[in-house]
Length: 158
Ligand code: FES
Image (cartoon, rainbow, N blue to C red; front, top):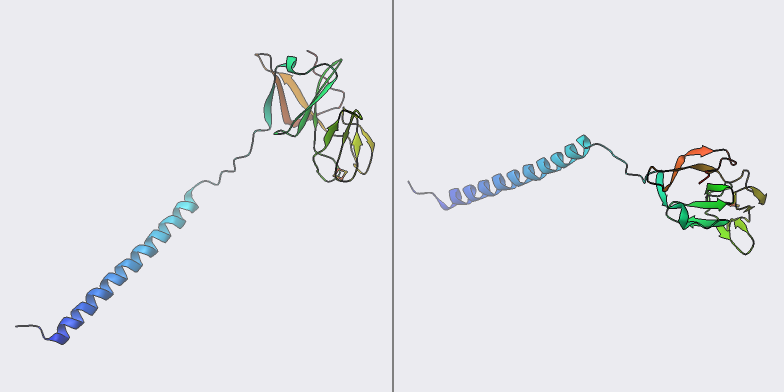
């Protein structure tokens, strides 16, 4: 028995609705899969290491202050040895700058000034600049650990 034109139209409409529903289900399923994948994936925060090699001690002349921009640390080599001094101001966290002409570390934000060892000279900073543990690696390079604050007088003699 042949289909009437109305039956053909109904069948076409039904096919269209079936394909539309299948497409909508596929999109919803894909969305659910993405959300599930994100939920099950571990939330890992990749932060830079707090320990870093600063290189050979020979790179730092005696009585020098070297700013390591990527670490925001000064490597200070005095006559008695090495110090690792934070470059982050203890007032509001601005990055200080070494001013060799004044032999001082200065904060550009509110004018705090520090000696090359981070001792406060003037300004609103409430504390001296922190010192970090500085040691030697087995192969003779300077190693700084920014998670380990040390007393300002602690020196690495090389
Ligand atoms: S942040 Fe350095 S003086 Fe204010």
